[in-house]
Image (cartoon, rainbow, N blue to C red; front, side):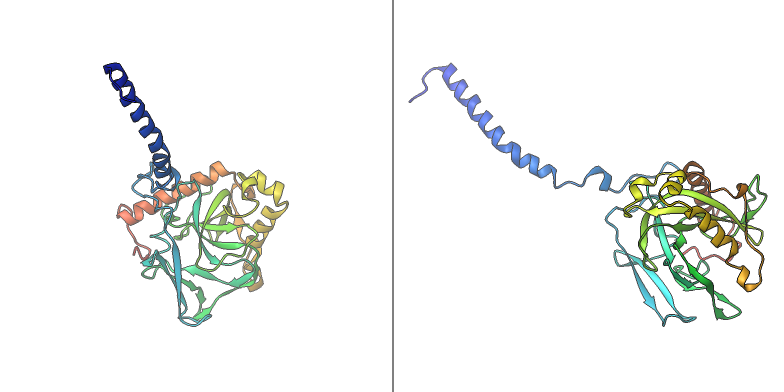
Length: 294
């Protein structure tokens, strides 16, 4: 059949373009799925300051050096194979609202491991006392570690408790069901905080749960911990209150009426100590405590 009139020619051309467009749609739709979802892209600068979160695909590894246990033992960190400090190189916040938790002491162990804030690249090592390796008197029943890019400023006095920071990153007690590996980096949901006072210094203990834990979806504030882990908060408080007494030392005290504060208060503590950290690494706050900022 031959198209002979102008109107028939225009109709045939329009029909051809429509057919081509329909054929292209599946290809375009498929191409859209090759782009990263917005939640997986590296975010822009955080509102609080100059700290930026790392890309969601960053992977953290660790390398052990020296015999364990020994005075020489260290765990060094890397990000996608590049050496990185767990205190300075791992971001505090993730794009999904979780915080990163550096596990120093796996649950049901007692070697007192810690990020060495006075050594370059701040590896994990075992704490010492009078030249000997330190252990807790008994196992700690939770994963224990710290929040990167936070710092409890020994020059800042809390307005109501009248105590100053202990010159360390903020501690975390992770209450999940899995024993995390020493030196692992795990996204957690912070939901509560105790104001422990250790030798006259403020030593915050953030209560958190690994975002991957089966119960994490039900734990969104401190009241949820008591509901789904009845009695656990008091066990944590008593453990940290009493762990020094076998060595003849007095119990640790707690501020804020011994209460585990709620998530809103907890996040305010985290942001305040992140602000102290930013001032330290920027030079606005003098580094007079012998800390390694590398």
